[in-house]
Amino acid sequence: MISEVFNRLEAWHMLIRSDQLSLSPEKSHNYLPKRYVFDTGLARHLREAAVPTIHTLATLDADARKPLGGVIENQVAIELAHRFNGLQGWKKSPSGCEVDFVLKMERTTIPIECKASLTVGKRHLRGLREYLERYDMPLGFTVSLAPYEAFSLDPHRTIVNLPLYMIESLPEHLAADRATPPE
Image 1 (tube, rainbow, N blue to C red):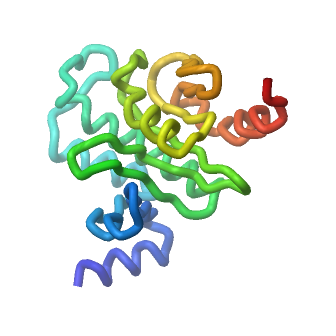
Image 2 (cartoon, rainbow, N blue to C red):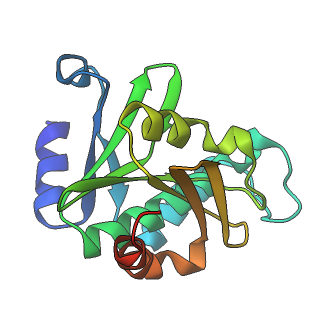
Image 3 (spheres, rainbow, N blue to C red):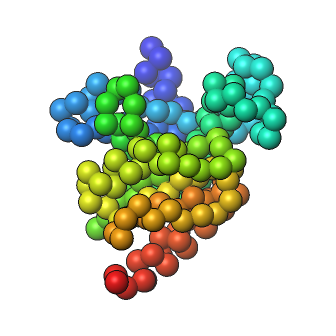
């Protein structure tokens, strides 16, 4: 019954589905898809009804900030679904090391991780680093509340942090990266 409701809401573009892939196709069927609500007002109401109020600058406890991370992830899902075909994520294992979105584009994939953080540090980059190294990819993105910054992991891998307000500029960042000749 609930799957029928989800299917209908997805067909009406009220829910955005993101299948979760893993290291092997055989294991991916163990992960349920993530779903994002297109109506951010409804998503906000559902999140706020279940948790205490959070403040972007004053709420420092990571567990209390999780709903904010969900709001950021939902907003990024809406933007990506609008600009790219099909959303999917990636998980190394059920207990951790995931990437929220993996965009398939022409001959490459771009991993994107969302964080409800005012600063981005090494611990925030763990899933992206794992993905980039495992699949020998040069570029990944975090989307957070932190300022724009590029992190060079090694001479061949970079993670760019886009502030949430810049998510609309992702296509321009990707085009600029493809136009830059390799060193």
